[in-house]
Image (cartoon, rainbow, N blue to C red; front, top):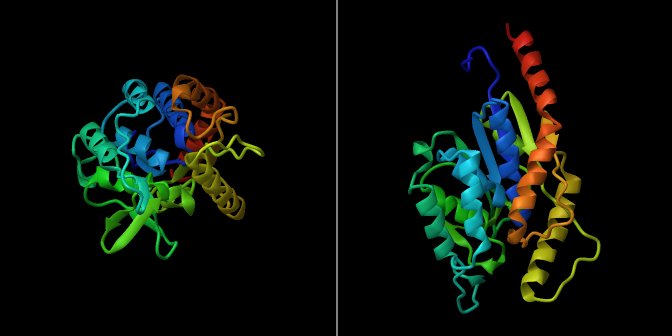
Length: 265
């Protein structure tokens, strides 16, 4: 079916650090059941997975790419001024993986969310260089140096919009599938400045998520509570959790598609 006879489906991939690897498992299931994805919006780690998928990789290829993020060669520590890490290395890695594409060259329309550090406003990025936009979306304040873009200082998109469901709706999606990989442990271990910053981000994110309803037709929440946002070594298990959660919703997605088709005959 083409866009005239089937609903346009949008996928909103949420922030969550390493827990965002569960998004790869969700993509596996959507592919296996031939559920098309027409639009993608991603926040923080969701922007990274979304950008890779939009650039042409399939879920199986993302499995292999995910292993790169277990390593630390892309972490470039700098003299602290506005962040512990410069972020250039990870931007170069993303640039290589996305083949240097611009947004208008991607196989699927993509919007990446970031946060204006000076105003606190959400920012939607869907033009220009994909790698730079993703680098902005994953720039945890205090960890990565902010990205300068059009006289704005941009940081992690998850600060103000952890799951950009409304963004992908505005892109043109008739049916929105949202994936929330948030988890807020009551007493997480804190033993480093990195833990302090990440826990501060989690606290802010919790407040934002509780105050905002995720407006999606299908909302998935993979079971990621046993994994911290920095445990990239848990990638295989996180992908598995994404698969298991997505399988529960295949029937509902197809039901929503059938309902749309009946209403638009």
